Image (cartoon, rainbow, N blue to C red):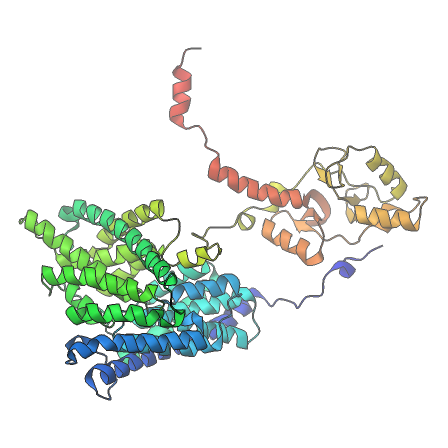
Length: 615
């Protein structure tokens, strides 16, 4: 007789879930503190490089390059930064190129959430150089990637599973977002929407801890003020509702436009007959020229975004910012320079929203739309639709304003933009690069069918147990007379579906064991006469599934013991078999979910219409 213990694989025991969540929460706290410190250091580096390059001062004060007095020499500054970044990408790591979030997603999808230690150093350094020399980027993308890198490194330093390491990576990324903008809730949601694609206690609790601590560290080191400041604005939902709808359509088109334009520019750079090392310098030269004519597009531009949100800029300057900031962004990022995508997209999309409101007021002077309100809604809608993180940026914009009146226009405009982008964009601005490499990125998260269906709902009830004194010869003869099934299995005596193992029970129905086809063949090989009983040839005691447990739990037990079927019992009567769980039961759980998703049921109207039709 084969024992169950002999069939079990040797695996390291998994600690209790509560213990692991507590341990992961502690590690998430470490990651959150590190992310807050990284945000502070990166801001200081950007300020230092900006002051050295444009103002020839040794100062860490964070300010814009737009007030420099270099004249035409200012054109060369982004080029120098681009050259340095190109060298760092070629001889350091090509993972520093781009805005950071797709690289974090790639680590989750292909590297089991492992990020090299050098990325944690080179990414913020390259971003500080690129931004400090006038690159039109934000600091948030590099901080998100760097925070994710630190989370991954902590997960590699200690003993973790790949899933736990993914949680720590997401904690670092979400904490980086929170530390950048002082938006802890949006940081949590962004990590869930772009990196985790799950909403479970094992990830949610550590995420909240990491973003809370990152935001607290930021408040101590950088202050509690948000990167964007916005005064009191009248969102006027009732009178402005039709215009928020129109703006949502425009923002959806803008999200499609920037995604296609960015990757089209990237394709053009790939066709250049020069080494990839020089691409950032070429893109930065275009940025330098554009910045010479419109200096506000240089650097991070958080102050410019605040000016737009507070309606401090005229319509001509808004148009220039919307056009030139967009061009500078796609030219530099398409060339492979290191920097964040969020802040520059916020700037040009906010300018677009402000221009929209001013234009409507010009056509209908009595409306008095607030340009700042439409600027805020536009910047959340464009990036939310382009990145497929709409919920995160609805919350993000609300956390900036702390104005409940912003909720309705934000929700309406953002989901309309997202609806349009979903229809015309198969991939997002975050996942297009990965899709081109053949990587499939989940577009949404949902409850897995195996975690929502109970064993009792899909178990087979047509399997008749064998009596323990049945000989293997009798069983073999019974199988020979049964109808063969593809794959070498045979049909059960009471049903058409194949069975590769049968339970053994006494005359009272008490479960004694299980015999498989492999057990049968081994018994016949040792005893060609087949006098051995099925109880002697089979496995005992049987590994069982419980009727009230989820299919995923039963499937995990099958994988753990490397077996393909489990008798089903009730917890209150563990010796009495009530069903049989096998691979077809697992498929049945998925079939139920597919039916719920795809099979349409006749509604009441169809029933009434059928009743009224003449017979």
